[in-house]
Amino acid sequence: MRKRKELGQSSDIAFLLIIFFLLLSGVAASHSLELNMSSSAILIGEAQDPLELTLKHDGTLLFQDRVLQNAELTPFLNQEPHLSLAIEAKTDWQTVVSLMSLLEQYPLSSLSLEVMP
Image 1: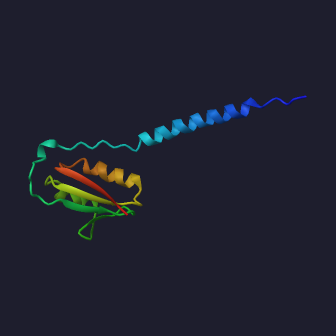
Image 2: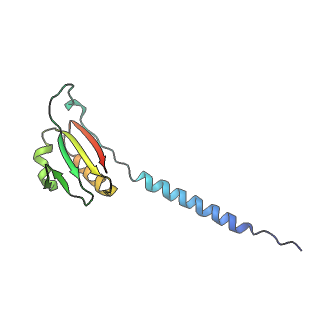
């Protein structure tokens, strides 16, 4: 007598894969961040030096080797600066998203992002 193949196992795996990909697509969508910047502040040929900040992997924000708190950013960012943000590669994505959400509150002329090794 021949044994019947168990069809239930492959359908269970297919069902679990469908659930996995649905969950995975939902997680990827939550990583997005919309950043609205005023385009009226951008001038061609403007000679203003960019404000250079570094976001460390532990969440600290550096300006000229000095640690800045979020409240200390206000005087710098209210002047519509050109901002250059260097992010360490090991920085958690939630830290970056939180900082970008904070930066969205200020009138930036331009924003440049760089991932450092």
